[in-house]
Amino acid sequence: MSAAAARGLPRGSTATSRASSRSTVPATRAIWPLTRGITATRRAAASPDAAPSSTPVSLPTTPEAQVALAADAVVAAWREGWTRQSVQLELPLIGASDLDDWPGGIRQQFKAARPLVEELLRRVRSADPLVLGGALAAEIWDDGDAVGAWVGSRAPLACVLFPTAQTLDRARALAESQEARGQGQQEDGSARRPLTLIVNPQFQPDLSDYGGPFGFGRDKALAAARSFRPSFAFTRRRVFGDDVYTLRAHPAPWRVAVVVDTRAGPGAGGGGARLLLEAPADALAPSYSEIEAALRARPDSAVNMPIGERLRRELAWNNRSLQEGPPPPQ
Image 1 (cartoon, helix red, strand yellow):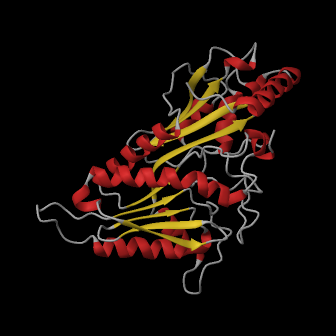
Image 2: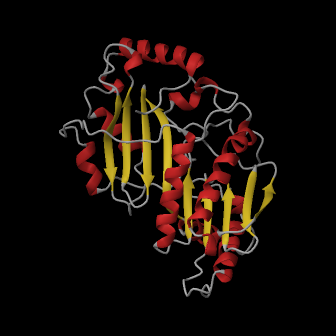
């Protein structure tokens, strides 16, 4: 079992995944969107007195389904006037297993993310070819940190993959340039609304790793980071032996689901994804502490099982991961 899985962190957020970068992101903090304390809406769900939810949650089970859902969310938010958006994609493992995720670090993640981002942009552009259509020029902003960008040649569309704290100012400037290009109307009278995406940001939520250029301090950087509103996020993490997914697809609310894996053996329950937490769409992402509290409130969660049963489940999960990968959410 990988160190990230043992700590209940999203895949791709390991402490070693950016070993070659100049701005290492500690795994426990590299979670986007920004999170903060428990809200009144979520407090009831995390209460020990709350009954465990049996509500099924529909989750994307393939990279293609995830990208299609993300594109729909991005376009829906864009039509509502969201010109700066953040997107968090769950990356498919390539050349690795759940027990040794991303041995090649951020460059290996880039290889997995690039086709997803390009398909996402293709779908977004096709939603409104008059405004967002046209060719995109690919750029490498930082080879060591694998920061890449796609910028429209004529359309006010741009996307930055794996932006770091050190490239945040550049991402802000890019968004502002797209917004300047997007002023005015099309020939049919429709607004020429710009769109700038940041995908899988690598900076810490509180920007404590920020070391930006002179004149662009941490407060300005934090304001710039928060100007990118989360329209889509999909992550998986292993928490105390349970597979937990977080999903936000605009305009839907945040949903956290626990997947009961029938292949883990007795005590695993009936299978499928069940609602664990829900938060309003305009709230911030449920935090790890909220997810942990909600799991402890479920009698059927692995965290509430005897230690021997938990070890047996983890051994079965480890063996299965080596052979066939993680179970898909159903």
